[in-house]
Length: 424
Ligand code: UD1
Image (cartoon, rainbow, N blue to C red; front, side, top):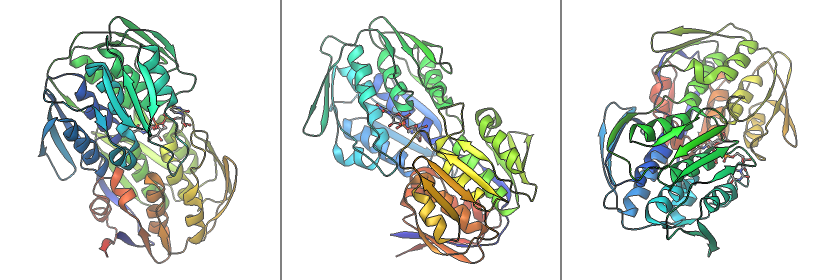
């Protein structure tokens, strides 16, 4: 088990290269299943979740070549002509829920697939019922057997008009991918509008798909018979960028986030951070974030995109622990996404939780402590608190961090932070 040890009381000052978006990389890798033509994806971050998705593709019979562009990113070339198995096993899905993204593409191309039911996870129940209802609307027969989703569409999928009762990100991605090679026109309503969905649609269109409306709440897909070979460079990770912006804010520092057009994808986050006291300016190929020295209390409420992202809630809570007053955080996406609060309180934070709301009363100083990561974003909120604390902290269970943040120690050390990974 590995831990990260951080010396508190340091300013984060420097340049942070922002990696490719995890939440783009995973669906784009899964989309390679849709056709036997090769797909070359660049700006793929070096992350545990990416490795899990690649081994899932490998277990289906795909082959891939990973070439390193830098320590932060890779180009992955996928050959999926050789796919000959159609099962995503429990052992893989349990490690990474995004494995469910294999469901739509496998079913659409091969007319059959078996994907383990993901089950709950630390941040909530996380059902996949809407993925299944969407596929059924396209004509699939879906059965749940022995903990597996067993889906068939012997005569292929057919275009349909489907309204999602709730906005779901991977649900939208799964059905959009499946409809790409279905017979006829599909209209998907009340879809998620995340930039990563737009990225997926843009990549599919480059391969010959006919998708329109992505980035709005209605997506129209004219099915095509096959997809062609293509190369595609994925988006920068807006969640990683937001996380390092908070690192500057919580330590009174300044960071240049380099990786492209980040401001457009973070508008609701930036608006809130400005109210807290962070200053933003656009620079060449990125965004400069600087602390004003103040941390003002605010209320935030997580919403589907373009609202405030749930994936930046835990990190924002760490910042508000040091605000000059009381803040209210409402978590509207996941029912159990405040587990970091208990660990932050071990560092001296003053937080009370009632249902989906967290009242955070700012304190003058956080204290260094040994703490335990509980999920991916929660783990970085503890790193942020540790950066601002008065002494050394150790963050345990850093495998959560490695799932979604690339080269954390290097990126922070390059900004002047004393940080080390300890293996036991
Ligand atoms: C994706 C992101 C995750 C982010 C989340 C919300 C990826 C790989 N993961 O997760 O980082 O936290 O969006 O922005 O992109 N729901 C149902 N039935 C379903 C599907 C979802 O009830 O079939 C509910 C969920 O319980 C949740 C809400 O819908 O309350 C949103 O979930 P969803 O957008 O599907 O999250 P993910 O796609 O799993």
